[in-house]
Length: 310
Image (tube, rainbow, N blue to C red; front, side, top):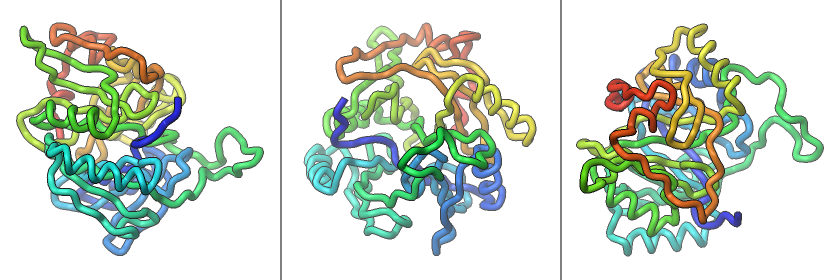
């Protein structure tokens, strides 16, 4: 599949309450590689198999949650074109150009607010720092991996009120596909949308929620179900707050476990899922099967999982 336009999730900036505790969690438990600290005190991380300089940025603040999520596009020309098309759509808040270098090792970024209230960024340039192995004749993984060691930052799940406007912006302007959805009631109201710009089941997902700009989780991918079970062991070994799992989703088919960082931001590590090609039809779940859609094994809804957001 020729990927053009918006390529993939590139980074997420999270607010944390205690930077020292957050660094320990994201480096020791999750197993991300710390790559830098900037003049503002933000701390940068990457998953081991990402070549970009960073995919997770932590900012110390008085309230947990997400500042913004960024997506990489295939070039500067695409970035400029999408700026014009986003503004013309009338679906986003005021566009803001963030100068190159404001985020370390990253080019100019276009930031806008989607109808659910979340700040989303697009960018075309970020320095490549590698994955600890040569580009010629590499091994299959580098030495000295620790913690859960996900291979990449995969997606975010976000909560907000105007789901319709956000889905319209992502599908009609940014070129995402609706891989799966959940609908409710006799009017088949869309209450969840799983959107992909690649061949994954989702690169970002949104849930209809009364409040704008709420963050449910940031997710990182592991190689297999055995690695998810190892993650569960590490959660107990390090006395991390477990949310739910290990289990499996009906939506996306991912094998999953959820847990919290020390500030209360939810993390997920998962494996599996299907390949989404552009001609794959949208899968629809109805609200009477929502338990099986979210937690395929026990088929029961978990109110804390659904309602605890930052």
